[in-house]
Structures are given as C-alpha cells and as structure tokens.
Length: 325
Image (cartoon, rainbow, N blue to C red):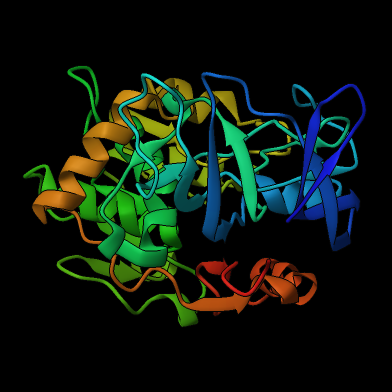
C-alpha cells in the first residue's frame, strides 16, 4: 500500500488488485482507492475466491450485458479479511474478521465485483463479521448463501436431484440434508468430480433411469440441459435454475406441456441469507470442509485464474494476499 497526497489536502491510498483489462488479460496492478468517508470501513483482505461462474464469463468475454459491465475491471465477490479502519458508530471494530462480497471503490476502474484486492473501502452494512477460525473457507459464504437463497422459503421445494457436483452443487446437497430433507441424488458427468459426497449419491446421468423427480436444481449454468431435465421430472415437477446462464434458454414446448413443468430462477442471495448461512456454519449444521481444492499466492494470480477456469480437478481456487504489502 502507498499513501500519498493527491492535492487539496486529499489523501490517496493505493492498493494492489487483480485487474482484468480485457477478456483473457489478467494482471496485478496498483490502483487508487476512493477515500473512505466517515461511515466507511477499510478492510485488509486475507483471502479471495475465484468464481468459475460469472468471473469466468468476464474472463472469456462471454458475459451477457450486465449492469456496470466494462473493462478494465476488478473481479471478486468472495473476499475475507480484517477491518483496519472502523467507522464511527459501526458495530464493527478494528481487528474484526469480515466477509465482504466485493466493493466499488477504485475510481475509474470498475469493481465487478471488486473484492480481489489487498485493501478495499466499503460500508459496514456490506461486511459480515465471521469467525476468524474459518480461515480461507470463509470465502465460500457467498456461494453457500446463494445455495441457501435457492432453497429457503415457504414456497420452495428441496431438491431430490441436483445437477452438477461443483461447489454450488455440493452446497445444495449439504443444505438439503441440513434442512432435514431426504438426501438428493447428484449428477456429475466428470468422473474427477464424483468423489467428496457426504450422505448422498453422485451418479453419471446415463446411469440414472429415474424420470419422476419432483424438483431438480441445476447448478451447472449449462443452458443446453433444459430439455433433458424436462424429461426427468414427474408431472407438475419443478426445475430450478440455480446457476448463471450466458446463453439463451430454450426448450421444446410439447414435452414441458405434457409434464405441466414449472420453471423457477433462483436469484442472488440477500443479506438475510448471509446471516442465516453464517448461523448454519457456526452451529455446525453446514460444513464447508473439502470445497477449496487449490490455493495460490495472490502474486501468482495470472496463472491461478486460468487454472481455476480450465482445470476440472479445481473445485475452488483461493488467493492468499498475506505476502502483498
């Protein structure tokens, strides 16, 4: 970090961040943080996660039109670190470990989602105090809250089939069991990702003959699967789209008509989901063990991001920022 005068008595704080200047072009660079206001906190980031959903789409140039989209941008909505400057009147204190779902505090450099930096400025309401003992696993709270948001609610059905055994699919299965539901079946086409199940079965879809699933949650983001999933539900069954889909979604109407199929889109988590997810983790009802398979120093971000996006053995890659000044 560098602190310098910026004219007219304004202090500028520079920080190191991951910068995606164009699709496929990732580097570390120095950017100026917006000056923290009296109601802001400054967080020194310890670990960030790399998203293989939305961030991969930004990296590949396949992200559909998105609010605030453009390059250069700083990715990252899975950040955990320590409060180094607290806001007056905030319940957060210096030294608190917090999860931060990104920030927009880099002047002309877009924060999409802005968490992959050594330091960031944000409002306390954007941060969630977490147990420091979670270590880098705390970066998974956003994905866990995404899964919780898809499942929770009086009008929601728990999945009896989850499609995809990546991190989101595993969290959906774990939360289903934590909610007292029957263990779901999970589909996974990649043999490298079929291990790691706890209390539920993981199958190749070709080995599953069942065609009466009441509720299927798709965690793959693959728009091509919809017809196949319609063929696997019972009459009146529901398909929940829990991933992020870059391609238009289409399906053959007659089979869906015969099944009286229902389609639901699970949107982004809310702060209530974050709080409820933290409580599940703190109580031991939800485990985050075994979901982070790879870690890299932040200085090696240029190779970590492509590996996270292309290596099927990599469930979740985290960056360690501790060696960055």
